[in-house]
Image (cartoon, rainbow, N blue to C red):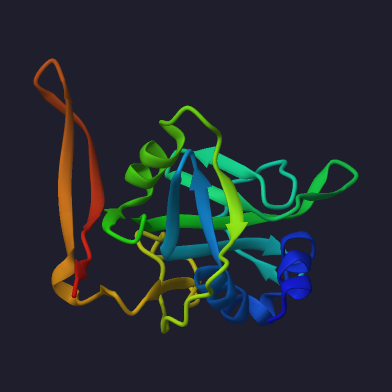
Length: 194
């Protein structure tokens, strides 16, 4: 994917080019804030558009490449498009893991959010001068509703290892006055790094 095609993807995402887009994003871009550079090590793509109606996407009204903060972390947003009152295109790239200044790994979407947005300056998505040539592995997204059709829309560098031991189901019971009122099953994820 060339730079122009990459920029166009944020305004007119093409479901057939998601893997190519993700590889280009990981190898050629970073998030810069203050004097720190955060390379993208693990991302998930969420896209709702004609021909790709992903039910797991948070509805939003965003400009292309805008940072969108939500309950699960933050996305680099695709351009939102409306037809009347209906949203016909929206989504973004969830940032799951980052590498700070090529030394410190930051795992998990909420940790990435806190690291990047808990600084004096606002973050910016920038092109890396020295492009990386890192293998990108395509796999299933984490914690998706089991009834959803989950394509392989999670992409990670080959430095973030993934195996079945990284996942644990946690059963959490919420109580009110000592009486169980709600059970919640959460997936805990912690990748290993080589």
